[in-house]
Length: 212
Image (cartoon, rainbow, N blue to C red):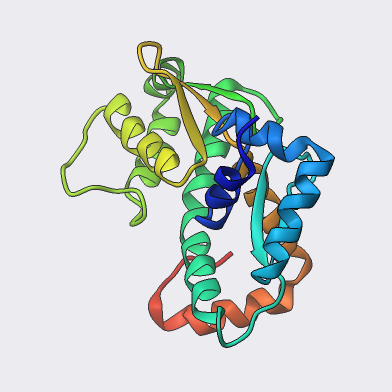
């Protein structure tokens, strides 16, 4: 188990703690007494500990939004708003490539070498991969041509956003983190609170941003 002070620092920095990203910190948070202690410390700062429904990841939110944290919360939601589209499109492409109906969740493995071969053999999947690669949040200035090259760029994006975590560099093996489950729950929230989303989309019309 990791010391409480280190776990608090990670949570307050915006980390999603799960077995893939930090196993020792995750063990600390799974302990009822220690979790209560951490929540007490967070409460002093107006924060509270949250976890995904599958308990695959722990993270911190503000207890309420006020003038002191409104800008911080807005920036966070703006970032999340921008990364949902490539993540959802990528997961759908992975499922199609593997010919499975179930979506990936936190803890699932991603073998980039196998996925690249599957995509390379399908013109349809190549088009879908290219469309993800060209999204503003994903694309780079240097042009990539092959499926493997484009996939590497997309996976780098997933790692940067803490959605995937490298476990074996030689085998190009990654594991999906608990933050992926959080993204699914966020999409469920959006679907449930349709009127809120319509208001957000209307505000973003002039910016040409992706609509949920």
